[in-house]
Amino acid sequence: MGKRSKTGVLKRLREVKKAEKAAHKREEMRERKESGVDPEVASPGSTLATAEDLAGYGFPVDEEDEQEEEEA
Image (cartoon, rainbow, N blue to C red; front, side, top):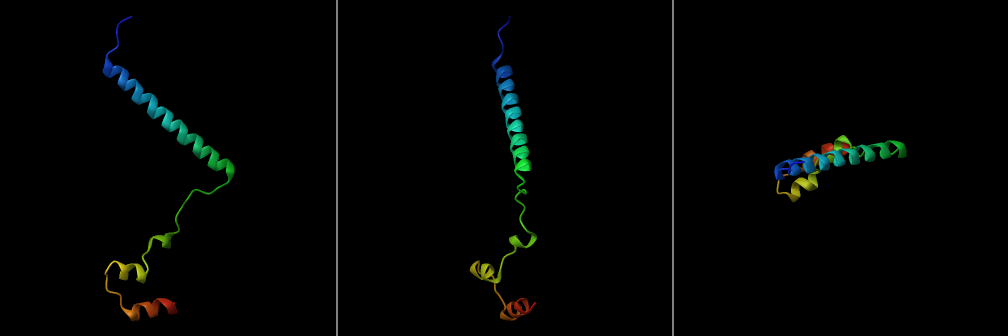
């Protein structure tokens, strides 16, 4: 048997690591499905900034806009 080159060995190690990572992800997905827990999906409005958030970042906030939002 011949001596393997270092690059070939490193390539094989990368492939093994990638395959193990994929297998781990598949196992986690299977466990989540079996446990009945829904995947963590953010609600559509959860990423919107409030008027207080905008004011904290220094954006001008009109008081009229705040009143319209409260009425809705």
